[in-house]
Length: 339
Image (tube, rainbow, N blue to C red; front, side, top):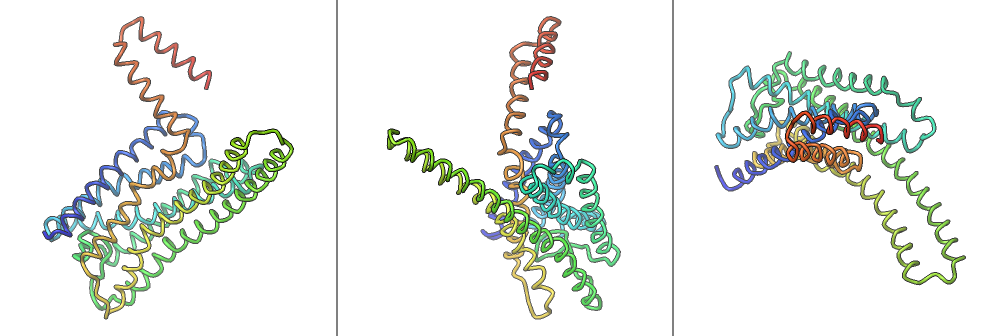
């Protein structure tokens, strides 16, 4: 192993640890909060977290072993299975992000009719489509034996089995990335830019009301006016930053790998192994960033985690006994009634 490969190995380990812990926290919130389970976005978030956990547990260790050992880390059958899962899980995560963006678009642009336009049943149908879509491409790759170990990416992934299948493999790869990456990216751009437009419109209305109020309050202290104007500026920037994170992280993490896979379809193009591994690491980093972008930084999820920690601390402070046990049960019941 050279210095670059050591860095790649450390990067994969770090990404895997963060991804596993953060996605498990999302699942913990889903299990402990009935409110999150009832909400439509919870269906998409759960599907996304499950896919990220499987990628972390199955695909990342395989790539790490490929980088460290510089050869196929598993037997042929296991490597094909991991490659099959990688194709399925990667497409599924992309479509899950697109579904989350559609949900937010409907919630922001059509708030009064959201409950009728996006029902729990509709969310389940969208998740089923993403599974069917991903399963179709992964089964096709398995049928044509296009799942194997690739030395360029040091992982079990899609790979051309022979020059006789180059045309079929090219068509498959182009269609796969067009209906997974490009379709999801177009949906993300359309929905989040619409959300940003509505957010800016509401910010503009709030700014007009604020300025009118400040104009009427002639005796207000200048520092108060300055704070109000600063808050207006922060409110405008906050919406733009969130949209930039959603779209930008998707492009930065997936685009280099997708472009590389499309470029290698040309017979005269050779892919450097270091770049191949690095682009693969970028796709893995999305699994670590998704929980923070879509879940853990939201107030609702933070409240659930704080509640879980508080319950665990109460159990440590008051060991289980008849009196304390009944007291904890009564307190939990009161908390549920209040919430």
